Image 1 (cartoon, one colour):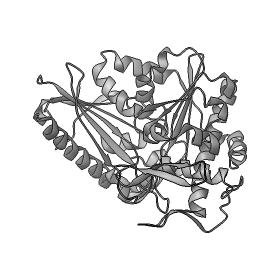
Image 2: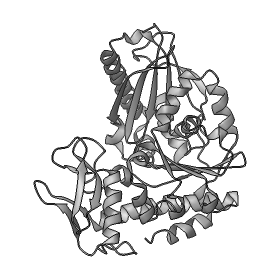
Image 3: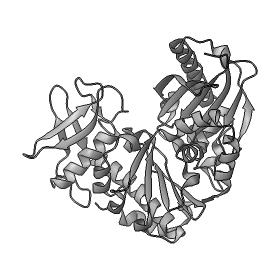
Image 4: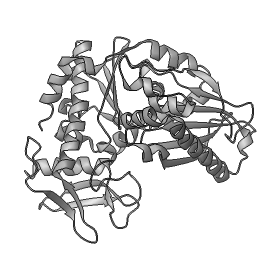
Amino acid sequence: MNNRAGIAIDIGTTTVALYLLDLETGDILSTLGDVNAQNAYGADVSSRISYAQAHGHETLTQAIRQQIQAMILRACQKADIKSEQIKRICIAANTVMQHLVAGFSPVSLGKAPFSPVSLFGEELPIWEGLPVAESAVIYYPPCVSAYVGGDITAGLLASEFESLLTPSLFIDIGTNGEIVLKHKGTYYCCATAAGPAFEGAEITMGMAAVSGAIDHVTMTGNGDIEFSVVGGGEPKGLCGSGLLDLLAILLDSGVVDNSGRLNADRFYLTKEPADIYVTAEDIRKLQLAKAAIAAGIEVLLHFAGISDSDIKLPALAGGFGSYMNLKSAARIGLIPESLLSVAKTLGNTAGEGAVKTLIYSDAYKRLKKICSNCEYIELSSISFFNDKFVEQMGF
Protein backbone atom coordinates (compact mmCIF):
# COMPACT_ATOMS: atom_id res chain seq x y z
CA MET A 1 0.00 0.00 0.00
CA ASN A 2 1.37 3.42 -0.99
CA ASN A 3 0.69 6.56 0.98
CA ARG A 4 -2.15 7.83 -1.22
CA ALA A 5 -5.61 6.53 -0.44
CA GLY A 6 -9.01 7.77 -1.55
CA ILE A 7 -12.56 7.57 -0.28
CA ALA A 8 -15.54 7.19 -2.64
CA ILE A 9 -18.98 7.63 -1.10
CA ASP A 10 -22.48 7.13 -2.42
CA ILE A 11 -24.97 8.88 -0.15
CA GLY A 12 -28.40 7.53 -0.92
CA THR A 13 -31.50 8.89 0.74
CA THR A 14 -31.90 5.54 2.52
CA THR A 15 -28.38 4.05 2.62
CA VAL A 16 -24.74 5.11 2.52
CA ALA A 17 -22.00 3.11 0.77
CA LEU A 18 -18.30 3.87 1.29
CA TYR A 19 -15.25 2.55 -0.58
CA LEU A 20 -11.63 2.94 0.54
CA LEU A 21 -9.20 2.59 -2.35
CA ASP A 22 -5.53 2.77 -3.26
CA LEU A 23 -5.23 5.78 -5.57
CA GLU A 24 -2.16 4.37 -7.35
CA THR A 25 -3.50 0.93 -8.21
CA GLY A 26 -7.23 1.59 -8.11
CA ASP A 27 -7.69 -1.40 -5.83
CA ILE A 28 -10.58 -1.24 -3.38
CA LEU A 29 -9.19 -1.92 0.09
CA SER A 30 -12.43 -2.05 2.06
CA THR A 31 -16.13 -1.31 1.68
CA LEU A 32 -18.88 -0.41 4.13
CA GLY A 33 -22.62 0.10 3.96
CA ASP A 34 -24.98 1.66 6.46
CA VAL A 35 -28.47 3.11 6.82
CA ASN A 36 -28.42 6.88 6.27
CA ALA A 37 -28.35 8.55 9.70
CA GLN A 38 -30.72 11.25 8.41
CA ASN A 39 -33.56 8.71 8.26
CA ALA A 40 -34.63 9.86 11.73
CA TYR A 41 -35.61 13.18 10.15
CA GLY A 42 -37.65 11.79 7.25
CA ALA A 43 -37.69 8.89 4.80
CA ASP A 44 -37.42 10.93 1.60
CA VAL A 45 -35.83 14.14 0.32
CA SER A 46 -39.07 16.11 0.57
CA SER A 47 -39.45 15.41 4.29
CA ARG A 48 -35.80 16.35 4.91
CA ILE A 49 -36.25 19.60 3.02
CA SER A 50 -39.31 20.25 5.19
CA TYR A 51 -37.26 19.53 8.31
CA ALA A 52 -34.53 21.91 7.15
CA GLN A 53 -37.12 24.59 6.46
CA ALA A 54 -38.56 24.25 9.97
CA HIS A 55 -35.38 23.67 11.97
CA GLY A 56 -32.44 24.59 9.75
CA HIS A 57 -30.20 22.17 7.87
CA GLU A 58 -27.40 22.01 10.43
CA THR A 59 -28.72 18.95 12.30
CA LEU A 60 -29.02 17.01 9.03
CA THR A 61 -25.55 18.10 7.96
CA GLN A 62 -24.05 17.07 11.28
CA ALA A 63 -25.78 13.68 11.18
CA ILE A 64 -24.38 12.66 7.78
CA ARG A 65 -20.94 14.14 8.44
CA GLN A 66 -20.57 12.30 11.74
CA GLN A 67 -21.69 9.10 10.07
CA ILE A 68 -19.11 9.50 7.28
CA GLN A 69 -16.38 10.27 9.79
CA ALA A 70 -17.16 7.08 11.71
CA MET A 71 -17.35 5.01 8.53
CA ILE A 72 -13.96 6.29 7.33
CA LEU A 73 -12.33 5.24 10.60
CA ARG A 74 -13.98 1.81 10.41
CA ALA A 75 -12.88 1.35 6.78
CA CYS A 76 -9.30 2.32 7.61
CA GLN A 77 -9.23 -0.04 10.59
CA LYS A 78 -10.57 -2.80 8.36
CA ALA A 79 -7.82 -2.19 5.78
CA ASP A 80 -5.16 -1.51 8.41
CA ILE A 81 -4.16 1.91 7.11
CA LYS A 82 -3.96 5.36 8.71
CA SER A 83 -6.76 7.77 7.84
CA GLU A 84 -4.15 10.51 7.27
CA GLN A 85 -3.21 8.67 4.07
CA ILE A 86 -6.53 9.70 2.52
CA LYS A 87 -5.79 12.48 0.02
CA ARG A 88 -8.91 12.64 -2.12
CA ILE A 89 -12.62 12.07 -1.58
CA CYS A 90 -15.53 11.85 -4.02
CA ILE A 91 -19.08 12.09 -2.73
CA ALA A 92 -21.81 11.20 -5.24
CA ALA A 93 -25.40 11.77 -4.16
CA ASN A 94 -28.66 13.29 -5.23
CA THR A 95 -28.73 17.08 -5.22
CA VAL A 96 -30.40 17.35 -1.81
CA MET A 97 -27.93 14.96 -0.16
CA GLN A 98 -24.96 16.77 -1.76
CA HIS A 99 -26.30 20.06 -0.42
CA LEU A 100 -26.64 18.67 3.09
CA VAL A 101 -23.24 17.00 3.31
CA ALA A 102 -21.56 20.08 1.80
CA GLY A 103 -23.28 22.25 4.42
CA PHE A 104 -25.70 24.04 2.09
CA SER A 105 -29.37 24.58 2.83
CA PRO A 106 -31.66 22.48 0.58
CA VAL A 107 -34.76 24.62 1.25
CA SER A 108 -34.71 26.29 -2.18
CA LEU A 109 -34.94 22.82 -3.78
CA GLY A 110 -38.37 22.26 -2.28
CA LYS A 111 -40.28 25.03 -4.05
CA ALA A 112 -40.49 26.46 -7.57
CA PRO A 113 -38.32 27.35 -9.38
CA PHE A 114 -36.30 24.63 -7.54
CA SER A 115 -33.02 26.59 -7.58
CA PRO A 116 -30.00 24.78 -6.09
CA VAL A 117 -27.43 26.70 -4.06
CA SER A 118 -24.88 24.81 -6.18
CA LEU A 119 -24.84 22.32 -9.04
CA PHE A 120 -21.36 21.24 -7.87
CA GLY A 121 -18.89 19.68 -10.32
CA GLU A 122 -15.98 21.05 -8.32
CA GLU A 123 -13.61 20.38 -5.45
CA LEU A 124 -14.46 21.83 -2.05
CA PRO A 125 -12.41 21.90 1.17
CA ILE A 126 -12.85 19.17 3.76
CA TRP A 127 -14.94 19.97 6.82
CA GLU A 128 -13.52 20.22 10.31
CA GLY A 129 -13.27 16.86 12.05
CA LEU A 130 -13.00 14.75 8.90
CA PRO A 131 -10.27 12.18 9.68
CA VAL A 132 -8.21 12.55 6.49
CA ALA A 133 -5.05 14.33 5.35
CA GLU A 134 -5.12 18.09 6.02
CA SER A 135 -4.51 18.76 2.32
CA ALA A 136 -7.35 16.48 1.18
CA VAL A 137 -10.18 17.81 -0.97
CA ILE A 138 -13.70 16.60 -1.69
CA TYR A 139 -15.06 16.42 -5.23
CA TYR A 140 -18.80 16.45 -5.79
CA PRO A 141 -19.91 15.26 -9.28
CA PRO A 142 -22.02 17.80 -11.20
CA CYS A 143 -25.79 17.81 -10.76
CA VAL A 144 -28.15 18.36 -13.70
CA SER A 145 -30.96 19.92 -11.67
CA ALA A 146 -32.58 19.99 -8.26
CA TYR A 147 -33.69 16.38 -8.65
CA VAL A 148 -31.16 14.80 -11.00
CA GLY A 149 -27.96 14.81 -9.03
CA GLY A 150 -24.33 13.81 -8.97
CA ASP A 151 -25.26 10.20 -8.29
CA ILE A 152 -26.79 10.05 -11.77
CA THR A 153 -23.94 11.75 -13.65
CA ALA A 154 -21.49 9.50 -11.77
CA GLY A 155 -23.68 6.50 -12.63
CA LEU A 156 -23.67 7.39 -16.32
CA LEU A 157 -19.87 7.69 -16.19
CA ALA A 158 -19.56 4.28 -14.53
CA SER A 159 -21.97 2.72 -17.04
CA GLU A 160 -20.00 4.06 -20.03
CA PHE A 161 -23.15 5.65 -21.44
CA GLU A 162 -20.95 8.10 -23.36
CA SER A 163 -19.96 5.32 -25.78
CA LEU A 164 -23.50 4.09 -26.50
CA LEU A 165 -24.76 5.05 -29.97
CA THR A 166 -28.23 3.45 -29.86
CA PRO A 167 -31.21 4.59 -27.73
CA SER A 168 -30.44 3.58 -24.15
CA LEU A 169 -32.33 3.93 -20.89
CA PHE A 170 -30.81 4.39 -17.43
CA ILE A 171 -33.16 3.93 -14.47
CA ASP A 172 -32.11 4.43 -10.86
CA ILE A 173 -35.05 3.28 -8.78
CA GLY A 174 -34.75 4.60 -5.27
CA THR A 175 -36.64 6.92 -2.97
CA ASN A 176 -36.40 9.49 -5.74
CA GLY A 177 -36.52 7.63 -9.06
CA GLU A 178 -34.27 9.18 -11.69
CA ILE A 179 -34.56 8.20 -15.34
CA VAL A 180 -32.26 9.09 -18.25
CA LEU A 181 -32.90 8.30 -21.91
CA LYS A 182 -29.92 8.80 -24.21
CA HIS A 183 -30.81 9.36 -27.86
CA LYS A 184 -28.63 10.93 -30.56
CA GLY A 185 -26.19 12.39 -28.03
CA THR A 186 -28.80 13.98 -25.78
CA TYR A 187 -29.54 12.69 -22.28
CA TYR A 188 -33.23 13.31 -21.61
CA CYS A 189 -33.61 13.32 -17.81
CA CYS A 190 -36.42 13.38 -15.30
CA ALA A 191 -37.04 12.58 -11.65
CA THR A 192 -40.15 10.94 -10.27
CA ALA A 193 -41.36 11.09 -6.69
CA ALA A 194 -41.54 7.31 -6.36
CA GLY A 195 -41.27 7.41 -2.58
CA PRO A 196 -39.37 4.90 -0.44
CA ALA A 197 -41.65 1.88 -0.95
CA PHE A 198 -39.25 0.05 -3.28
CA GLU A 199 -36.55 0.37 -0.61
CA GLY A 200 -38.80 -1.21 2.00
CA ALA A 201 -39.49 2.04 3.84
CA GLU A 202 -42.98 3.11 4.96
CA ILE A 203 -44.22 -0.45 4.29
CA THR A 204 -45.83 -2.25 7.27
CA MET A 205 -43.33 -5.12 7.31
CA GLY A 206 -40.79 -3.39 5.09
CA MET A 207 -37.09 -3.11 5.83
CA ALA A 208 -33.77 -2.43 4.12
CA ALA A 209 -32.01 -5.29 2.31
CA VAL A 210 -30.11 -6.35 5.42
CA SER A 211 -29.94 -9.58 7.40
CA GLY A 212 -33.41 -10.98 8.00
CA ALA A 213 -35.05 -9.35 4.98
CA ILE A 214 -37.00 -11.52 2.53
CA ASP A 215 -35.35 -10.56 -0.75
CA HIS A 216 -36.97 -12.94 -3.26
CA VAL A 217 -40.33 -14.69 -3.40
CA THR A 218 -41.31 -17.46 -5.84
CA MET A 219 -44.30 -19.68 -6.46
CA THR A 220 -43.77 -23.40 -7.06
CA GLY A 221 -45.60 -25.46 -9.65
CA ASN A 222 -48.10 -26.69 -7.05
CA GLY A 223 -48.91 -23.15 -5.90
CA ASP A 224 -46.78 -23.00 -2.76
CA ILE A 225 -44.96 -19.74 -2.03
CA GLU A 226 -41.28 -19.94 -1.17
CA PHE A 227 -38.82 -17.19 -0.27
CA SER A 228 -35.17 -16.49 0.50
CA VAL A 229 -33.83 -14.44 3.39
CA VAL A 230 -30.76 -12.19 3.37
CA GLY A 231 -28.15 -13.88 5.54
CA GLY A 232 -30.32 -16.97 6.00
CA GLY A 233 -32.12 -17.52 9.27
CA GLU A 234 -35.62 -16.42 10.21
CA PRO A 235 -37.37 -13.63 8.26
CA LYS A 236 -37.96 -10.27 9.92
CA GLY A 237 -39.60 -8.37 7.06
CA LEU A 238 -39.59 -7.65 3.34
CA CYS A 239 -37.10 -5.54 1.39
CA GLY A 240 -37.89 -3.94 -1.97
CA SER A 241 -37.01 -6.87 -4.24
CA GLY A 242 -39.06 -9.23 -2.09
CA LEU A 243 -42.03 -6.86 -2.16
CA LEU A 244 -41.81 -6.67 -5.94
CA ASP A 245 -41.79 -10.47 -6.31
CA LEU A 246 -44.67 -10.86 -3.88
CA LEU A 247 -46.80 -8.30 -5.70
CA ALA A 248 -46.18 -10.05 -9.03
CA ILE A 249 -47.27 -13.38 -7.49
CA LEU A 250 -50.36 -11.84 -5.91
CA LEU A 251 -51.33 -10.41 -9.30
CA ASP A 252 -50.81 -13.76 -11.05
CA SER A 253 -52.85 -15.59 -8.42
CA GLY A 254 -55.68 -13.03 -8.39
CA VAL A 255 -55.17 -12.05 -4.75
CA VAL A 256 -54.57 -8.53 -6.10
CA ASP A 257 -56.69 -7.51 -9.10
CA ASN A 258 -55.67 -5.32 -12.02
CA SER A 259 -56.88 -2.20 -10.24
CA GLY A 260 -54.55 -2.91 -7.30
CA ARG A 261 -57.24 -4.06 -4.90
CA LEU A 262 -56.16 -6.66 -2.34
CA ASN A 263 -58.99 -9.14 -1.67
CA ALA A 264 -58.38 -9.08 2.11
CA ASP A 265 -57.18 -6.65 4.78
CA ARG A 266 -53.75 -8.22 4.57
CA PHE A 267 -51.93 -11.12 2.94
CA TYR A 268 -49.69 -13.29 5.13
CA LEU A 269 -46.50 -14.58 3.56
CA THR A 270 -45.71 -16.43 6.76
CA LYS A 271 -47.15 -16.69 10.28
CA GLU A 272 -44.36 -18.65 11.91
CA PRO A 273 -42.10 -17.86 13.64
CA ALA A 274 -43.13 -14.27 12.84
CA ASP A 275 -46.06 -12.67 11.05
CA ILE A 276 -44.81 -11.33 7.71
CA TYR A 277 -47.52 -9.76 5.62
CA VAL A 278 -48.54 -6.94 3.27
CA THR A 279 -51.59 -4.73 3.65
CA ALA A 280 -53.88 -3.02 1.15
CA GLU A 281 -52.12 0.25 1.98
CA ASP A 282 -48.72 -1.33 1.23
CA ILE A 283 -49.99 -2.45 -2.19
CA ARG A 284 -51.23 1.08 -2.83
CA LYS A 285 -47.80 2.58 -2.06
CA LEU A 286 -46.11 0.11 -4.41
CA GLN A 287 -48.71 0.92 -7.05
CA LEU A 288 -48.05 4.66 -6.79
CA ALA A 289 -44.29 4.12 -6.97
CA LYS A 290 -44.44 1.90 -10.04
CA ALA A 291 -46.86 4.29 -11.80
CA ALA A 292 -44.49 7.21 -11.23
CA ILE A 293 -41.52 5.36 -12.74
CA ALA A 294 -43.48 3.93 -15.69
CA ALA A 295 -45.05 7.30 -16.50
CA GLY A 296 -41.63 8.98 -16.33
CA ILE A 297 -40.29 6.51 -18.90
CA GLU A 298 -43.21 7.29 -21.21
CA VAL A 299 -42.58 11.03 -20.96
CA LEU A 300 -38.92 10.66 -21.93
CA LEU A 301 -39.81 8.42 -24.87
CA HIS A 302 -42.30 11.09 -25.98
CA PHE A 303 -39.72 13.89 -25.82
CA ALA A 304 -37.11 11.80 -27.66
CA GLY A 305 -39.66 10.89 -30.32
CA ILE A 306 -39.13 7.14 -30.04
CA SER A 307 -40.97 4.12 -28.60
CA ASP A 308 -39.90 1.49 -26.07
CA SER A 309 -39.23 -0.95 -28.95
CA ASP A 310 -36.36 1.35 -30.05
CA ILE A 311 -34.51 0.94 -26.75
CA LYS A 312 -31.46 -1.30 -27.16
CA LEU A 313 -30.19 -1.12 -23.59
CA PRO A 314 -32.40 -0.57 -20.56
CA ALA A 315 -30.03 -0.39 -17.58
CA LEU A 316 -31.28 -0.61 -14.00
CA ALA A 317 -29.04 0.90 -11.36
CA GLY A 318 -29.00 1.21 -7.59
CA GLY A 319 -29.40 -1.34 -4.83
CA PHE A 320 -33.02 -2.11 -5.62
CA GLY A 321 -32.39 -2.27 -9.37
CA SER A 322 -29.55 -4.73 -8.80
CA TYR A 323 -31.51 -7.25 -6.79
CA MET A 324 -34.97 -7.10 -8.28
CA ASN A 325 -36.33 -9.83 -10.51
CA LEU A 326 -36.75 -8.28 -13.96
CA LYS A 327 -39.69 -10.56 -14.78
CA SER A 328 -41.47 -9.35 -11.66
CA ALA A 329 -40.71 -5.75 -12.63
CA ALA A 330 -42.26 -6.28 -16.07
CA ARG A 331 -45.24 -8.15 -14.57
CA ILE A 332 -46.29 -5.21 -12.39
CA GLY A 333 -45.59 -2.72 -15.21
CA LEU A 334 -42.56 -1.07 -13.65
CA ILE A 335 -40.70 -1.48 -16.95
CA PRO A 336 -42.26 -2.19 -20.37
CA GLU A 337 -42.42 -5.92 -21.10
CA SER A 338 -40.76 -5.27 -24.47
CA LEU A 339 -37.53 -4.37 -22.62
CA LEU A 340 -37.33 -7.58 -20.62
CA SER A 341 -35.16 -9.51 -23.08
CA VAL A 342 -32.50 -6.78 -23.28
CA ALA A 343 -32.60 -5.28 -19.77
CA LYS A 344 -29.48 -5.36 -17.59
CA THR A 345 -28.84 -4.67 -13.93
CA LEU A 346 -25.72 -2.62 -13.21
CA GLY A 347 -25.37 -2.55 -9.42
CA ASN A 348 -24.44 0.52 -7.42
CA THR A 349 -23.43 2.77 -10.32
CA ALA A 350 -23.26 5.89 -8.14
CA GLY A 351 -20.68 4.25 -5.89
CA GLU A 352 -18.82 2.80 -8.87
CA GLY A 353 -18.88 6.22 -10.52
CA ALA A 354 -17.45 7.84 -7.39
CA VAL A 355 -14.63 5.25 -7.42
CA LYS A 356 -13.91 5.83 -11.12
CA THR A 357 -13.95 9.59 -10.58
CA LEU A 358 -10.96 9.14 -8.29
CA ILE A 359 -9.21 6.78 -10.70
CA TYR A 360 -9.84 8.24 -14.18
CA SER A 361 -7.52 11.15 -14.97
CA ASP A 362 -10.15 12.69 -17.27
CA ALA A 363 -13.16 12.00 -15.01
CA TYR A 364 -13.93 15.64 -14.19
CA LYS A 365 -13.94 16.55 -17.88
CA ARG A 366 -16.11 13.58 -18.82
CA LEU A 367 -18.62 14.28 -16.06
CA LYS A 368 -19.00 17.91 -17.13
CA LYS A 369 -19.54 16.84 -20.75
CA ILE A 370 -22.25 14.36 -19.72
CA CYS A 371 -23.91 17.09 -17.68
CA SER A 372 -23.78 19.63 -20.52
CA ASN A 373 -25.58 17.17 -22.84
CA CYS A 374 -28.44 16.61 -20.39
CA GLU A 375 -31.90 18.01 -21.07
CA TYR A 376 -33.92 18.07 -17.87
CA ILE A 377 -37.70 17.66 -18.07
CA GLU A 378 -39.70 18.88 -15.06
CA LEU A 379 -42.56 16.39 -14.80
CA SER A 380 -44.64 18.50 -12.39
CA SER A 381 -45.24 21.05 -15.15
CA ILE A 382 -46.32 18.54 -17.81
CA SER A 383 -49.97 17.49 -18.01
CA PHE A 384 -48.93 14.59 -20.24
CA PHE A 385 -47.13 13.06 -17.24
CA ASN A 386 -50.27 13.28 -15.10
CA ASP A 387 -52.27 11.53 -17.81
CA LYS A 388 -49.72 8.74 -18.12
CA PHE A 389 -49.46 8.42 -14.34
CA VAL A 390 -53.19 7.72 -14.11
CA GLU A 391 -52.93 5.20 -16.98
CA GLN A 392 -50.03 3.41 -15.29
CA MET A 393 -51.85 2.96 -11.98
CA GLY A 394 -53.43 -0.22 -13.30
CA PHE A 395 -51.66 -3.56 -13.46
